[in-house]
Image (cartoon, rainbow, N blue to C red; front, top):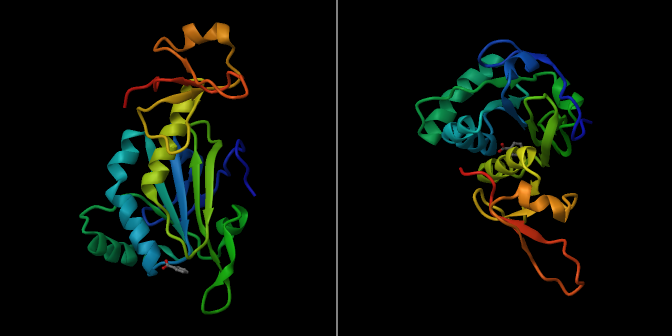
Length: 221
Ligand code: BEZ
């Protein structure tokens, strides 16, 4: 099972857009790999369509997209036509990995033991892996096969991961890009002025401890 901070496996795979070697395909970009139980399934169709609709927003953040589904390349290509029609999109340009033998699904810990296909085989769950330009895993999510993901939330989380990779801040509950951030607990008071020229506000707590330090978002959208 891959853990946060691990180098993501540099696998070889067939995709709907030709063979890839994962690290080479990623290049210097960030990458979002998201998995699906099977082609021609209703929830997956909505998810892949939604990601295609949002592709421009991922590209603005320098994030390359790649899906994975446990069927072959020919099936993927036929399914893409359904996804385009259902989601009313002209273009579907990110690759779908063909993981017919579920080798990657097993290697990456993506099996959902509670959902089985007609032959009784456990399905691949809905996993999300966000990988940095250093090829290390920065964020992961595992949803069961029966729960579709919210890709606006994934974009929001990507904003946080990318921001907190650059600045000594963390983002609070329900944070949206551009709103107040929290200064990292490891930053000393004598460092605040130099690190946060926009200012820092300390929230008074009953405990008298100064741990909740807010600063305007250090980065414009
Ligand atoms: C779906 O994509 O609709 C789906 C796939 C497997 C199990 C449940 C739902």
